[in-house]
Amino acid sequence: MKERIKEFFARKGNYYQNNEVNENKEEKNQNPSEEIKRYAIEKFKTRRSIRKYSQKEVPWKTIHDIIENALNAPAAGNIQNYKVIVVTEKKKRHEIGKLSFHQYWLSEAPTLLVVVRDNYDLKNMYPNEGETYAIQNSAAFIQNLLLLAHFNELGACWVEAYDNEVVKEYLGIPIEKTVDAIIPIGYPLENPKISKDPMTSKVFFEKYGNKNRENHH
Ligand SMILES: Cc1cc2nc3c(=O)[nH]c(=O)nc-3n(C[C@H](O)[C@H](O)[C@H](O)COP(=O)(O)O)c2cc1C
Image 1: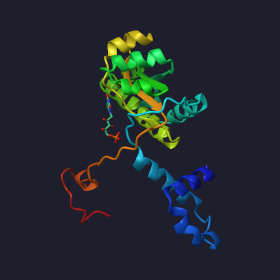
Image 2: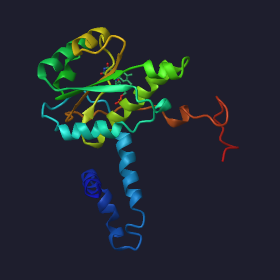
Image 3: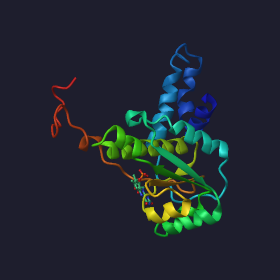
Image 4: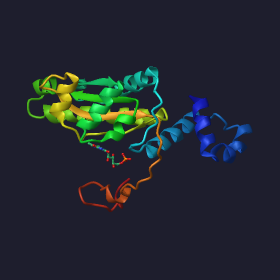
């Protein structure tokens, strides 16, 4: 991990140069988690939806690790009400692109993860809110998948525009379930920059609408 982080910052160009001075100092390694935190934050900041992929295959081990770690997502009632279908066959990827309102760019990615949600257990446990919880659980899992792909230097995109019933039929998914996302994963061939809303437009203090932090500790 440390090697990987070093590589990352080396590629970024200046972190290690600017911090070489620390190499001989006592505080070196005093707080190694600081470095890991910086790396993680950088990764959170730079995740973007990727829509251009190299056709180079992604090893199963990498996909396996992404899915396994994504399963640490929070889940209402700790009911992990989702499955994921790993699709690599070229013909299938093409067909799924077609069923996604002709978003053929996603068929170029060597792996597609199809996230399938099941509401049954959550609805049983929480009759009123079960379906909402089921969707939220699935969304948390999907976000983990996207971030983990990026942590592995891979690109991914949350694709939701497809014909759910037809995709279900095509992949043999039982009728009562729902496809929550199709996620192409592959080596990125683009590095899109987009802007996000400033934090000041999103945060209130103590009550909705209050932007004044004066009495806030
Ligand atoms: C629920 C959901 C559905 C989405 N569906 C699509 C889609 O069908 N096609 C697509 O190209 N991007 C899709 N996206 C990706 C968004 O366009 C993208 O997240 C947004 O433009 C912000 O860009 P970023 O992910 O790089 O921050 C979807 C994202 C979400 C969360």
